[in-house]
Length: 530
Image (spheres, rainbow, N blue to C red):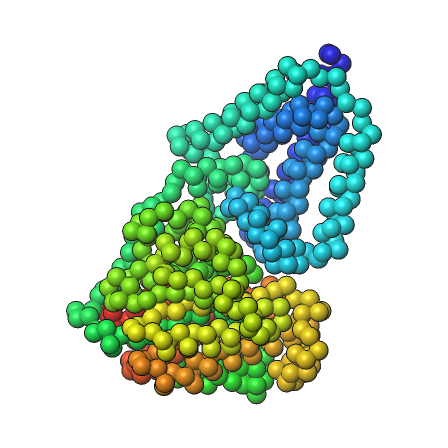
């Protein structure tokens, strides 16, 4: 038995070795350079490494060993799991320019339910080849290895020790976050934190911060708006349509010639001349729509949410009264009916549970667009516009319509468009553009058709209309970004069009608008705030 214990210990050391090497390498790779000087130094103390890497590793190894009696198999599987987390973080860093965060684990079900929105960016062949290789190797070890003769008592002991190890790590993390507070973990410096403490330490500490520091006051706090002295009557309140356009940036950042811009998005080019428009500063790049979404609907700066900033929906209070939001304000103060239209699964980002808390009366998802036409892989943007116009005509009072488009969602593959779409002038006339940029321009034209429907129908509504559109994040594409300074390439664009409302344009000039400010502009144009 003593030899078997020694053998298992040797396997643990062997399995931990690549984890240690990878931990140091990955953390070092994230150290930022400032004029050639390192501004962060790796601080892998033995205490940090033992509590956040070694003890969890031992816990998983002992659990697997107790279940299977196969030490080599248990070591390989445990090491694969730990290295797999690094692999996911490296892939995310390469695609989204951000390492893995604790909240990403809560999106795992979405990866299974909608693999095309995630694995598609890595490539199915590459992904399944890697998973297949790991599975085959571990499978062979499982079948070929001779198990140890472990008694039931020993199995139970391994399980208990495993739970004790996890308990030790959780207890240490709790005490560190709640009382010791020796490890500084600035929420806005994710890469710096990992370079100093390591990926696993940051994951554990961020998770505990999210659990213990709910920041309910941040969710409940209302923005510092100065309300109008007199409320406009209900019959004078405008309809408000707010469009969150998937991966949208203005065509002038992609196309150099004005004629091409007007060909791609003629309505945008026309409305931009006499309406509010500019850059839209968003807290997301390439994905993580919920960050921009939350800031827009609550008026809260993503930077002020602490560690909740990575997925604000995840930590929202259960009671509606504990959240301030634009829909709540419009409904309680001015009698608006609020609804969201999104031609995709309402369970994505848990929106079907989150949106009622934000003050929406109705969430209309893909079920309403079962027979709608598509452009590319998703429901065409113009279908959402037509649906919304019909709903506005049926409204007996002012309505706030929040529309989340899907047409421009990646990934961008060769088979994205059918032959009929490739013969469309919106695609055919931009033959000089490389793929997939040419596909992106085609979908910009789809968004423009959406804007045209609202513009053309605005005069037929029973009350004024405020139409706003913004991009949730830049597309995951290599872009030219013409006429865009380096510090604005992470931004998207916005436009606000009004029909039946006059206002002093110099009051609302914003070359760059923060994502949390657009609600204030809409409320001000409506006459609700000064």
